[in-house]
Image 1: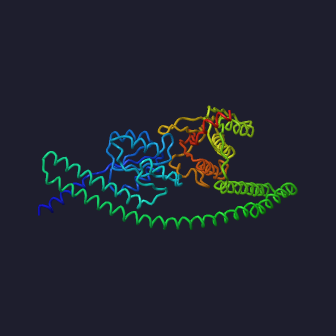
Image 2: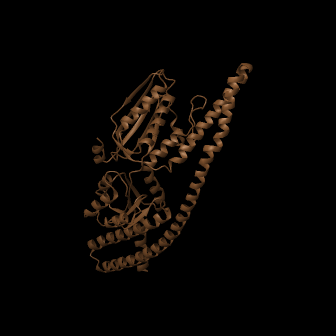
Image 3: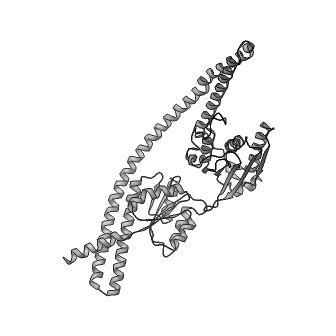
Length: 442
């Protein structure tokens, strides 16, 4: 009876222990995904947005496990793990690396050399992640339980309990070893199944890309032909038979021409959007200040009668594809002009600021236009998403989707902030150019 009560007491004590788990990632959306996956475990999840913040938190908490992103600006995951292992207090904390990019074996071996106990690729399976985390949480709880009871034994001097705890620790380690072995076997099977699924998905994707190429060809040739016929014959009607037509009939013909031309622009934008994923990036250092000035000069020449005041700061040189980045700023600055055209004078500011956590440059384009309601912000970068009436502002609704696709292909982010009647500001991040390339180009 006494042994049964003792086992129940130990089980209850282990249940009440809550483990601290450190989540390290520079992207807030990735931290939210990790929290959502681990929330069912009911443990204490603590965020860190950079390697330096993680090292500070390690001085304040006793963590059961660290989930560490590999690709972070400034101090990456490998460097952070090495510094964690150098500290006496934190060198035994298990580390699981998370990455969406470095799948080469050399990077995986580098992760294990830095002290990792596991290496997961994004997007990860939440069940697999929870299973792996549960193993280490259980190990931490059992160890913490043993440590607490050992401390009690030290204070009370009960040697018999010490022997029981030693045996319990051995049982826990044997049980956990068996569980880890079984879990690894299950995970290996899941990995093989997932690999087969990915190979099939790659084959399906290749077939879909071929179909998309065929569709693009059809759009380029088959759909444009009737549009050219419609536009051409309506133009002939207006020029040759205009004097014989009523004013209402001429108005109808102009509407047909305008819509045919609008359809042609829409086809052009859709083709440009579909090709962005397949177009190879030709990266080199880009002087964004000069690029923005060039774009603004062209836009101002197109609207000489409208007063435009521009302020272009000294923008950091970035690493990217000049042609695609020019398209980004053509779209953003064209929008700034379009939505501020009804103002007495358009004011556009292009500058940059330093990110709070990562220190990366954040570029922005700010205008004094009509702005928009932020409750519609989630739809802002979708294809065909418009926040204003087409009758008031021209466009196809594809421009911002193209901006987002280009920025994401460069490994950056884009978002916006606005208020109705007070203008809008678009923010974006781009990778900085390596200093040695900037010096060489200079």
